[in-house]
Image 1 (cartoon, one colour):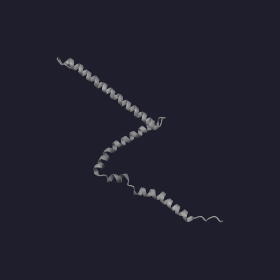
Image 2 (cartoon, one colour):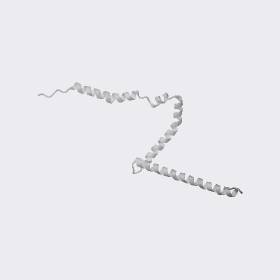
Image 3 (tube, helix red, strand yellow):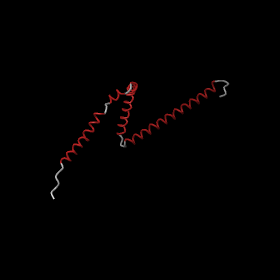
Image 4 (cartoon, helix red, strand yellow):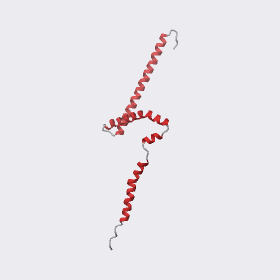
Length: 125
């Protein structure tokens, strides 16, 4: 029995379909998707104003985030572990600061009580 002839029409259709899907699909998405500027111009004026006001703060937050990631990447540990450790250290530092503040407030209250009873004659505090 002789071998079957190659079906070049089928392979041509498959190549054309591949080209349409692999090249035409992304090209269509790029052509249809609006740019950031076009989206910004579609905002209402109040949102545009608010977005412009918050832009600098968001940029600073992003820069801070990137700098932290660079700092974490210098460690031998994975980034998520270094981030968790830094977060834990910051939380412990904040707690220690709050405890110190509470102690300072308590100490001042004690000073006020002691000085208040001795300065005012006849006071019964």
